[in-house]
Image 1 (cartoon, rainbow, N blue to C red):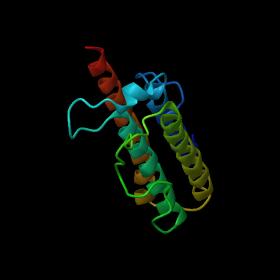
Image 2 (image 1 turned 180 degrees about the vertical axis):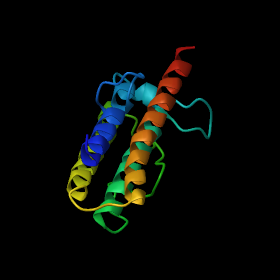
Image 3 (image 1 turned 90 degrees about the vertical axis):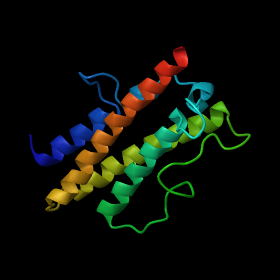
Image 4 (image 1 turned 120 degrees about the vertical axis):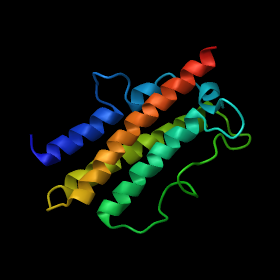
Length: 152
């Protein structure tokens, strides 16, 4: 398998393709209600909703870097983690919209990667792409843990 196919396969498996190791990021979010998404294990800790947006932000960041785009074009103001739910906006519609943003950022990243892999690339470039896949798998596990904590 060539590098381009391998990188795209890693990104897709970490986000949505069937895996041998357990749920990927998209699977870990499947069936999560707005109440579950907004639940915090305690004050000051991130919830599932914030983790999902955090993953979307880093997909955007890597896409922006490999495409040579300027900062500041993410759909939400701020960076890294975004407080969710916003006051008075803990609705299924708001949760759905933010999951859709994650999906859009994944699609945009894969398109940018496919384009960028047509040109010569260095190790730093590939490490960023592998990093996004590992990041998705890490947060998929974190989301599964947050879901389990709510069962008790």
